[in-house]
Image 1 (tube, rainbow, N blue to C red):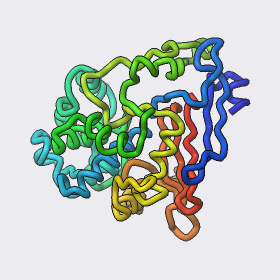
Image 2: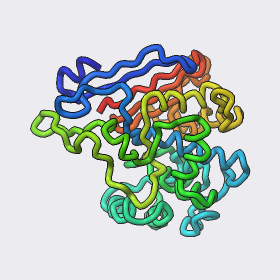
Image 3: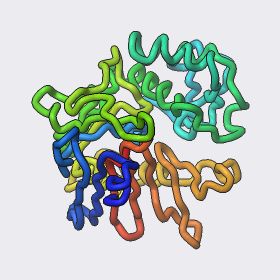
Length: 317
């Protein structure tokens, strides 16, 4: 952490190591913005780590039998008719929704901030799929399957993704520092965003300046949270779906999320396979040793089910 900031490779970093609900170590280095020391309680964009929250939301609906893993996506979004893509395929990035190039970005830019999750999903359905559903894992340029999954959650629940997560995940777990968009009173806890310009890091968005507000909530990565809230969310996976007596999911669904769903289709040479919502790293006996994902340099979460510890490492931009 210190060397990355000292050498100009990152503007700041926060790292936490926790076991159960005890924070064993929490450290921040670098700056929130020019001349402002980094806060250990900063609220950070989780980017693709947000897919873990979307996966939990989907599994809540599965447990309630509102949706089923083998449901065709076309049941909720008719434009997917004939494609053979199921909810399971969305959760595992095996639906073939990984088209790259101008056609993808044209659809993304036209819908990602200005319409609805369903309209974006419809636009993605119109693009050619890249492989037969279930044939191979392909995360694609943005993990777009989870944008479609967010639309399915909204349609099936009758709520926005934000409202559903707030009611069923954030509030029950006491995640008071987890948001899609920050309240004005919390804005200064959002660090500045930096880019490299001529080899040096320069602020691209000021401290407290949130992302431009979309007209809907992104299932692929819209959640923002403090390190302590990330760690509390992580306990769902360490404690079988229950945190301090509050059950969000039953243990069988947590186990299913942390199960290898790719087998021989796992990415070769990368050291991980995929469950629901995150990657799995296996131990010597084939058991799940770590479960987690990273978010484009903004946040990383890794949980160790056997040791009952978690390490949400955030803001290593």
